[in-house]
Length: 432
Ligand code: AMP
Ligand code: ZN
Image (cartoon, rainbow, N blue to C red; front, side, top):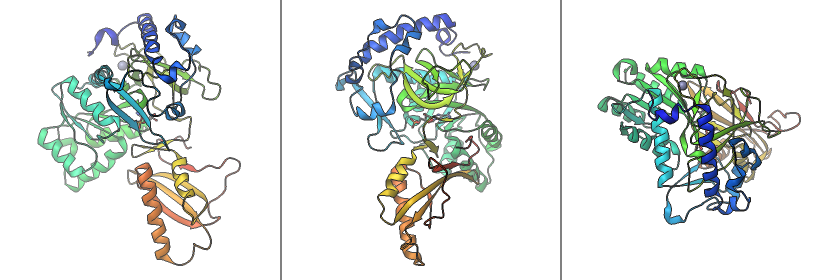
């Protein structure tokens, strides 16, 4: 069962031809933006999709350097929405959409949900932030497009989430995986069991790395099937790649995105099936097309056909990043953001260490900070005040409350060579 049968099951030749046509159209749009105009591209460069390699890569830095309108291809009157991503210092990463783009995005999310088994008769509760983050409005419009009764529940407030689920008979939930352990605890505190006291049947989980074991645990806790959802603001948000009912990798919607996997050091394509960095080109976006955008996400194409009949290639779980960004509680964080804050605080010494841990099913960010010797005295109130101040500043910057621990100068072990600042001890990490 497919929502867009023709395109979802198009054979590989047909898909490649469609991609070449759309790539030429995309370039024709893109060169109206100051950024791509300066790159002297032309649709005539493209005979087949492989010709895309003639075009240079686009990076997050390019987006930030050309903030805010350098990638815009249409007059501002035509733009109807913007989204922007967390996790940058200085200029945010912002993406603009016109009506066509929003409609195309909603269709991709609807198609993705349908492929997991969601139907118009479902009640869809969207448990995530509705601000600039794309998971809120992205899933809202996608689920509405499919025809679900869609509850814009927003993030947090677990008691209210549970009440909504029970009042309206929620059957499908979208949430970030790291929240679901906490929600399960609140069910337990209320002496409720989500497996018997709700109508939940499908969870859509994404926006941050998680393991197969974490997925199975969530399925077990709630008595549901949980599906991995991958996306990023620069490529609209959710609806880039999604697991189908088979749960064997995420179909990347190749009519809307042209995917390459490259070696992040040599920038050459990796052999099929090997791990590398995902590079994406939008094929159906007008206001702000992006060509060969380096996602920094590491994955691989899963070889072979999927039993579901969809021909769009599948990517594996994201296993890491080719830069130092990490994600905690759904928020993207670059260590530089934290370092920037610490450098501005005079009492702080030269070393710090960030440890990411799973404590009681909750992800926590421990920030140990060396304090200058004359400050590290027995004056507890003074140290307490400094701890609170650092906590507040980090929280304001990265949107996640850290556990800050002040330590004596010299007590953080030095690494040999390049300083290692982040220790990710969570199960989803391959150990940064
Ligand atoms: P944002 O643009 O703020 O939504 O963040 C996008 C980033 O979140 C991606 O580049 C990935 O690093 C990460 N991400 C999104 N979905 C997943 C997923 N299903 N698994 C692992 N990481 C994900
Ligand atoms: Zn499939």
